[in-house]
Length: 183
Image (cartoon, rainbow, N blue to C red; front, side, top):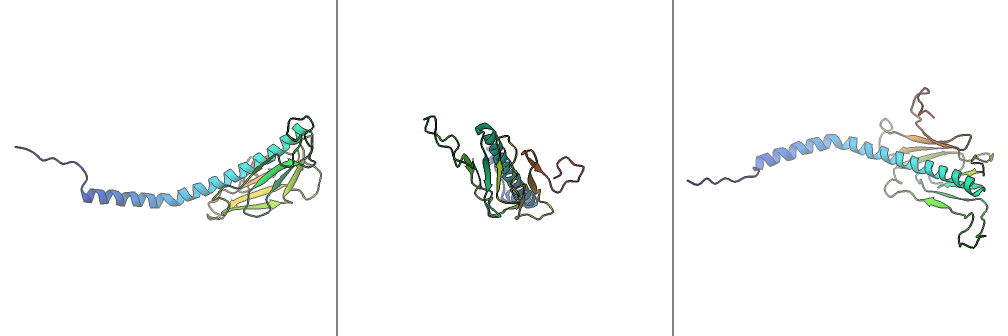
């Protein structure tokens, strides 16, 4: 006697598996969407903080005034760092001693349309050669970052705050006053 044994899934088993998978995915998708949106907020905030730290370090390194400039649009996190006074190549190596643009960063694809920036002060901040900010009134002092694609109740909005000594700090505007993350 020969036994015909065929292995595999029956149509009913396959449909039950697909149904269970669809239920699990539909329950997990809103959480995943929130996770991605909050990751975009953090990525944007860290990019801006890194740009500010770069401008401060370049001011100290070059012994010159260096400006951090962020885009003026509310949903554009592009920024650039450059010298206030451009100093041309003096040592013959083909590189300006203090260029107009030291480094720039453009907003990442896909995040610019949902990221919302609120700037306190103007779009620029100047660091002097000691690494502190210049005493110019109305300079950039804080950038609030949020994502408009998710409800405010689940958004982990962040702020980049420029301290008196020139240090840029990430902080949470929703934290309580006793929390070290508080702005």
